[in-house]
Length: 75
Image 1: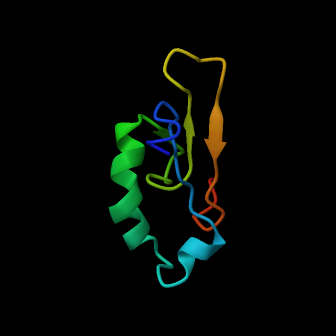
Image 2 (image 1 turned 120 degrees about the vertical axis):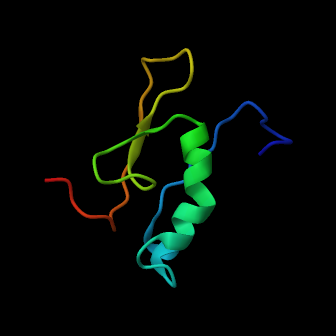
């Protein structure tokens, strides 16, 4: 991505394949949370590192919503 589309922000979200061997998300958080944090995502309560919203800088009319189906439901 950095070579072909350097201005595109890539934000991961955990899915069913990412829980195999990492059911509690410890490895996911170690690898991906720093990058999510550095891009300024807004986590849903109790979902830090997993479910979030994000808007590209300068474009508040665009909102990306990423939901991790394996985290605790928000109640």
